Length: 186
Image (cartoon, rainbow, N blue to C red; front, side, top):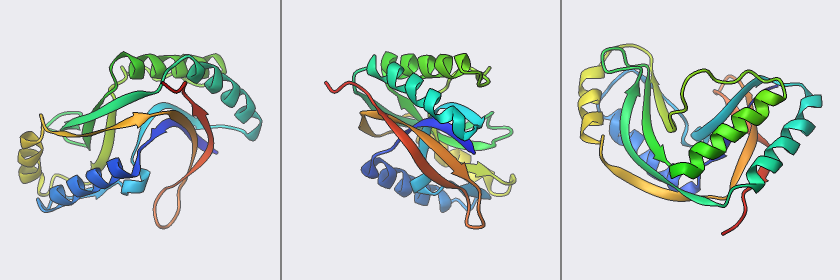
């Protein structure tokens, strides 16, 4: 099963991001929008895992998460990857200070110790709102994104991390939580 470890978003945060997506759609760009229910903050992409791997993934994740207190994520700014000249992904930024980067690093190291391939790119915390299908209508959307580059879109409390299974289907990708690992309450 194709899986990853991520922070799931609070419903209020998903609602705010849905409103932001709706504003961006008015620009008419050729973007495949991520369903608000599917927006999440990936900490470690595992790829294909076997049923027998789940127990070790859970044990490692519990140990890592127990070392971190719950913390706040600040959601602000918007941009594109890889760059404005060739936009592929539309994102909003996420800042969880040292707690988020430390948690992500330790989760990634823990999964690497279990034999999963570590990400070579530097961790850039973000929430993917959409993926560009073509360059049609990109100009107006890039202008709108530029206007939002310093906007604050809210914050949320992070109290857990989840192991999530990804299943492609005719209606798009379906995400299913396999397990949840709790941070220490503050």
